[in-house]
Amino acid sequence: MIITSLRNPRIVALRKLGRRRQRLLQRRFLAEGLQALHMAQETGWKPQELYYCPSLFNSPAAADLLGRFREGGVRPVEVSEHVMRGLSEREEPQGLVATFALPQTALADIQLSPDPLVLLLDRLRDPGNLGTLLRTADAVGASAVLLLPPCVDPLDPKVVRASMGSCFSLPVVTVDSPEALPAWLRQRGLPLYGGDAGGQLWTALDWRGGMALALGNEAEGLDEALTARCDFLAALPQQGRAESLNVAVAGGVLMYAWRAANPAQGPVPGMR
Image (tube, rainbow, N blue to C red):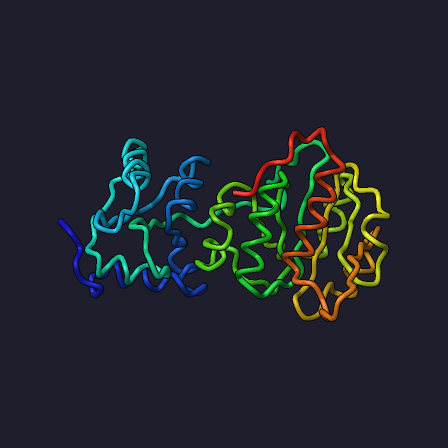
């Protein structure tokens, strides 16, 4: 049976998942598009629900992905083009939307690789910035991303979309008790680097080995208390008239500084 109405109770509940409160109440989040759902399937995330619209499939990859989800035991529900467009935030939906259970990963659950990079984001507010930073952290092989509240929800549909599915491939944990963070870093032997305009030139710092890299709020930068805890502060030079660098751009440069200094992590991956 094909769902053709946006008033269908299941569709009404799905459309509410754009709001954080509803994601918490329903204990699930929404993801759409081939790249994000391909990443979810590859990394072992199983949808709670999967909705599809064949008339919106724009490549054989969509039907192939649908088939792989079916083989994994998912029972997809067909919807009309009108309903799929109502569920999607894209101008051109790709015909697949799924829901997933909210992850339950806590700080204590994170498994670190040898000489890891842990990205620490302080009060980020923009979904596009967070999604881009997740994508870059995934590309460089970071072990985890930690969020200090108040922060944009990492499972906001705009963040999931901007991450191109990287939200499925590495742990993203909101640190509800920031006072526990220094001890967590110390126990794992991770020095804390911070991105700060008042720090040393980034090329003058030693990026070898494991570390945590802290990036601050778009308007205010790092919190003063967090800045005081940093072992090193890294600054990027600015020669034009721009007042500041976008946090996602600055974070990308600094993450790749770590990546280039740690060849034992393997070849530098291409961006997805």
